[in-house]
Image (cartoon, rainbow, N blue to C red; front, side, top):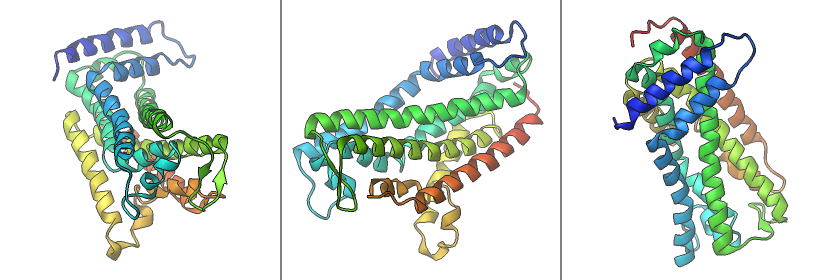
Amino acid sequence: MSAAEPTLADDRGTAARRDSAPISRRPSSRLLRSELRLIAGRRRNQMGLLVLAAVPVLIAVAVRISSPRQGRGPDFVSSITSNGLFVPLAALSVELGLFLPLAIAMLAGDAVAGEANLGTLRYLLTVPVGRTRLLVTKYASLVIGALWGVAVVVLAGAAAGVALFGTGPMLTLSGTEISFGSAVWRVVLVGLYVAVGLAALAAVGLFISTLTEQPLAATVALMIFTILSWIADSVPQISWLHPWLLVDQWMAFGDLLRDPPFWDNIAQGLRVDLAYAVVFGLLAWARFAGKDITS
């Protein structure tokens, strides 16, 4: 634990007192803003965003120095030299395997288990902040964190790609060209689709975070869940299970780069994401609502 952690805990206590006085029934975003400030202020989260931003820049520079050979690597990487907007797409396909889930795991591990570990969770619940409201706020901050992570990858990748390879009409996976404006809109849709999948993973992580008071244990458990899901999704002998795995359609965002977009896999992925978010969100609420808070 860094020396800055107690200070953050004190800041959280101060923010909680400010959020709880005066008592009001009106909807307020103060608790959410306090949570977002806490997330943004952690050094490890800031370093995590730098790592997320570094990957697309590294991909762009590597391709610029040595163009990929035909038949090597993902289609997005092979297409980077034709349009810089393929850099964020290639980066997302790479980072979805490890870095983006790890970022969500770190945030989710701190959501409840981190508060319990620092001793601030019990204090938060002694002020007029209901458990349901607190849990909803925690999940909302995780969803925003997922959007932050994806936005950093997309913006850094787009900036590096346009700077090194330029832009213009984009050649879709169907072999047709779309305008630059349409290409930007497709990249935005891809980013939103990836963020929804990560938000569903955050619901799983939030549930795990309610089961322990050790944030590192929650982080590791969520990463194990993600890795096992990827492994199971690659085993053809259990193909009947694949449609029910959270990660099964994560890479389907490539269908948004077809002309016209192919929506079947996207819709299936969104349905699974919604199911995971609802089921594990309810499990987290059921666990947290009756949990005996001792720290």
